[in-house]
Length: 324
Image 1 (cartoon, rainbow, N blue to C red):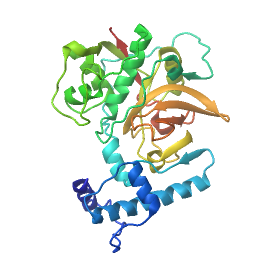
Image 2: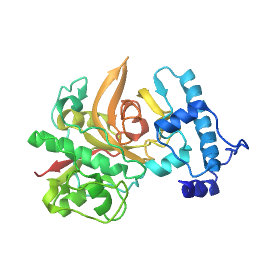
Image 3: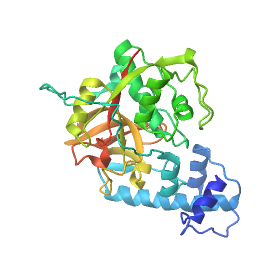
Image 4: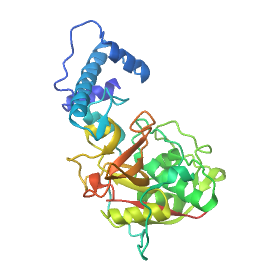
């Protein structure tokens, strides 16, 4: 952490965060937060910098909540990170052109879609996971999409291995590369058969621990929320990418997420849409994140729906075809 702090300070992240001359930090709320999130620092100098960042984040959250009724923020385990650090550590997606290997999701037929869908209540969704600072968010979207489709086919919900993808996918990580790996590799291991240390390492694929195979995948029409709604309703959980770079997302706690500065094209994070609904007349997507249950609504965010493709939620949506 100290090396990362030094690097980020060199590029200007720590500008404005002064180190106080007090020999120790005495703020009780800070110490409670530190204990809650098991934060440890190398020395007092690092703690003072982190405390200054934490105070600035708390002030931002308090000011935001005072001005917003429909969405609330709270301090969480990202509380001692600047927004630039947060993006560097958590949002590891690199966007590529969509591959020609995918088929297109066909919207043929006139369907009366339900007003709300929640695949969690139907058994399609594993518990919320935590990527830590591995930065491999795309692996959780890939496994989540496979887990849902495998449950749909077999009636069995099996947690799949993000570590298998992180260790074994060559080149840079993306959802499409994840699907393609499972096809070419002949399968993806279960989480039990390929447990993870939480960091990228040597590929240890175990052919005796395969939990799912893949025959292909479908891409949804870019930016089309109606196509996404139909796919969620008729197919199951859908892997998506979106802009998660904002401070409001870093500290999201509850309500329908809406960020006026969000981009529909600058995609830096992936997650899993597991349903949709409405709240007080505002449509939303139910999105499973991979930052643990202490973030958001027990690990989920309600992303505003039917509002100009908020944060690019429908910009790169897809789902796999499972083989077995």
